[in-house]
Image (cartoon, rainbow, N blue to C red):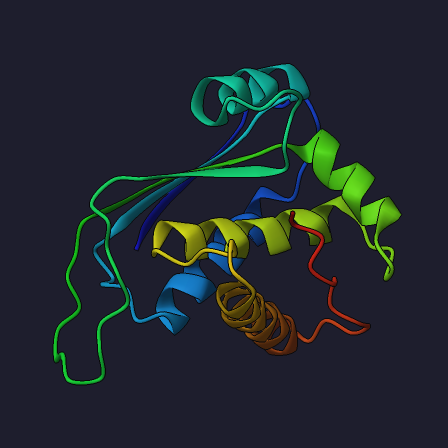
Length: 165
């Protein structure tokens, strides 16, 4: 799995954890090991510009996903998952920090960025949360992936609750 993590936000983030949880999520979703993903952390101003340009919404957001080859998890009948370019995930540590502090289960910016990375991966794979049933499926899968990764890493304490809007 080729995953590039670039931090252009000016905020110190745990890039290794972002890389690790992205790799874990992609493996859990059975994405081809030769597929490619890019994750970039940007400041609030850059995220606001992307949010306006692509969503026509004001202000910075927490995460945005830009799919490339529209890869999907393989069905159970597929022997070989397709490979390709998954796309880009853009994270905003400033928004993540605020969300982590405001969450019911207050957690760190890095924990929020890990959650947002999984959220972004799922969006790249075609998951959405516009409808109630889609939201339940996506957020349930997101929690299972984050919990699985945390358990594998031996991390204790409650997993961050979904704060993604």
